[in-house]
Image (cartoon, rainbow, N blue to C red; front, top):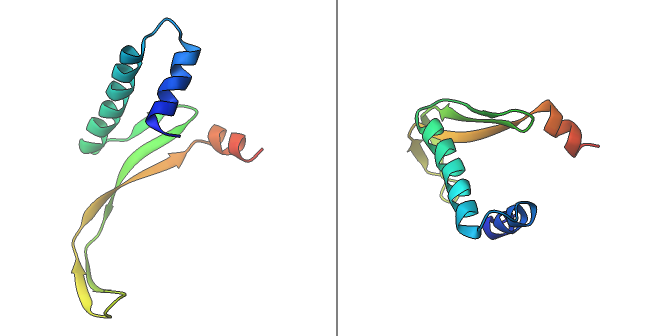
Length: 93
């Protein structure tokens, strides 16, 4: 689902809000998730799941699949999402 689709659905459910207000709410929500992850904290949405940052260790002996050359891969952070039990149950019914 794309951002415009989300805005349309929210507008249909909340006719009192105009499109600009919905966009501000959506932007604030995504910025708060980004800020929390930058601070290396978990963002938990009860009944939905948890966003968290996982550190991936550096690798000294990885291979370039195209050339077969051994390369160095530096340490990096990845964003992960773990679905809640309630969401998993809903998806698998």
